[in-house]
Each structure stands twice: as C-alpha cells, then as structure tokens.
Amino acid sequence: MVIDVHCHVGFSARRTDAALPRFSFEQHGAAARPGFDSYFSPRFIARWQPLCRLGFVRRMLGVDWRLGPCDALDAQIQAFNDRHMLAAAGVDRMVLLAFDEYHAPDGTPLGPPPPRSHRGSLGSDLYVSNTLVRSLCAARPDKFLFGASLHPYRVTDGRDAASLLEELKSAGAVLIKWLPIHQNIRAGDPRTVAFLRRAAELNVTMLIHYGGEMTLARQHMEFESPAELLSVMRDLRRERRMPTVIVAHVATPSTRFHSARSFRLLTDALLGEFRDAPLYADVSALAAMGRAVWLPRIARWRELHRKLVWGTDFPVPLFPTLFVHRMGIEALRIGHIDSWIERDLRLKRAMGLSQDVFHRAGELLLGV
Image 1 (cartoon, rainbow, N blue to C red):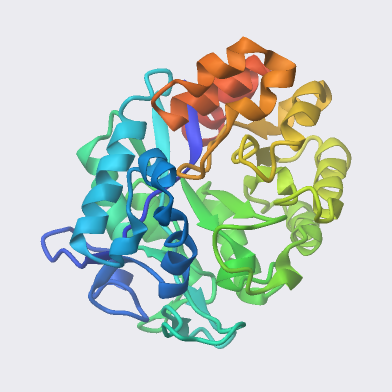
Image 2: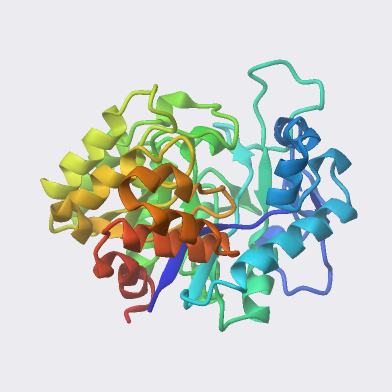
C-alpha cells in the first residue's frame, strides 16, 4: 500500500460546524479563537499575497491569496486540494494532518498575532481542528487517513494532553503531528515526555518536524535540532516506552545556505544508535525549491532507505525541472502530471528511492 504520510489541509476562515461530531476538547473550535475549525494568520496570508500579483503564480496554485480570509478563498483552496488529491492514481491513501495552535509554556493557547504585529510576535499561523480533519477523512475513507495534532502543553477541563490522546486514537488517528519551532514544543519538557510515553502505550506514531522551515513562522529556533528529542528517545527506549517517531524532511535545512547539523545528527542516529529502534524520517518536501539539493544524495544513500518513509508535504510546490540534469526528459514528463502528489511519487521513484520507502507508511501506520 502506498501512503502519503505528510499531507496538509487548511482553510483561511473555516467556521465551526456544529453538525460535526466533535472532540471533547474542541467543542467550540479553536481554543484561542473560538468559532473556527481552521484559520490562517494575517502574516501567513501576507507572505503569499505579493506572489499572487504574478499571473503565473495564480495559475500554478489556482488560489488567489489577495482575497484575504473568506469563504471564496476557502472554496478555491478546496478545489485545489480536490484537483491534486483525487487525481493521484498511484497513491492508495493520504494522511491528512490537523494542526494545533501555538501554546505558551504555561499552556495558554495563542491565536494569530494581530495584523500589524511587530517582528517576533508569537502566535499561530495555522490552525486545523482534529474535528474537521476527522470529518474529511470520514467522507472519503477510501482516500484519506486521519492525522491528528495535539499540543503536549494543552489542558482542557483539567485533563492534560496525554490523557486526551486516547480519544484521538479511538477516533482512528494514525499519527500525531508536531512542528516544535512554530508551535513551541520542547522535547524535554515533562509534559512532552509524558505524551510520548502515552503514545508508545497506545501505539500512536509521532510525525515531528526538525530542521529548517520556510512556510510557517520560525518562532522557536532553539527547537530546530533533534538533539533533545534523541536524548528523550534514548531514555524512553531504556524504559521500553519509546513510540514510533518519524522525523519530517530527514531534518534537512530549508535552503542550501543553512546549517546541515540537524540532518547529520539525525542520520547518524538512524544508522547508529537507533538502527534497530522505531525511529524513521520522511522524505517530504525534498523536491521543493530549497531542499531539492538533498534528494539526489539521499536517493544514492542506499543504507538509509530502510529508515525512510514517503511523504509529499502537500501543498508545498515541487519542481521536477530542478532534476533535468540528472533525469533528462523524464523530469519534464513528470512535471506535466497534473497532481502534485502523483508527481512527487513518480519523481522520487525515478530518482531511485527503493520501493520499501513507498510502502513503509502502510507497515508503520496500518500494519500492511
């Protein structure tokens, strides 16, 4: 079974739908911005608006960010998602990812920063409720798997995040998504460690982003490195309570000008200390503009393939033309495939990633 383990969804201003069966901790939608099942921050939208003045960008994305948060923009986003997801004929399932809000160290959720916030303002650029994502997956179980997101500092009605995890597992969540440098998640925080222990007990996989980031605000670069996570995993492994963890993007830097220390640290761990432990990395976004330099190297590194999982990081754009010097006309043919998800699958196969990479998500998440 071929599964895209890393597929984002999100809307600019999706109002809470009272008709949906709701999780106990999402009765009113977003904790920091009640009444919404999904939103983008003004600063996130502002990053895309200048590009939409270029006609070819609007045609490529099919989404006009100049509209700002509104139903019309969200209708365009839904049409864009349908176009790329439903046309990915070679993909059996896609894990759609919820995305929890930023939480301060005291557990307070923060919504989007104000429109004219100063540089360095903290808050959520993206929120997508578990309730919404579960409903999208329930509508098309033949295509989608439920990827949940729950901040480890969250407290709801006196219940901590670790105790809420079972509710997500019972609802069919196949993994939990975290982006520490945006959401403010320290691996060594006792609440994070308790959550990871509970994930191991419930057999819930973690998908955690380390390394570079260019899409959402990099608010806590002290959490860019996987070093502290590896230390926590070491301790949990001794306790025999280590969950399955997939590190996004093989912890690569987001541009060639940034440090590759996180990548080296992770790959050393994957092939060394954690060689026989349930620690993996996904190859999502490795055909995007900033990370494309890493895909040929990883494709040639055959020993690493046993630790890799296929994913796309949709809707991050990919550019097969960046690989013309290696693939020739085949890169151009792949670039004409309508679905970005199908395009990513074909490109990474053509670049030489082993077939096990494309089937590993099925083994880890569904046991098939």
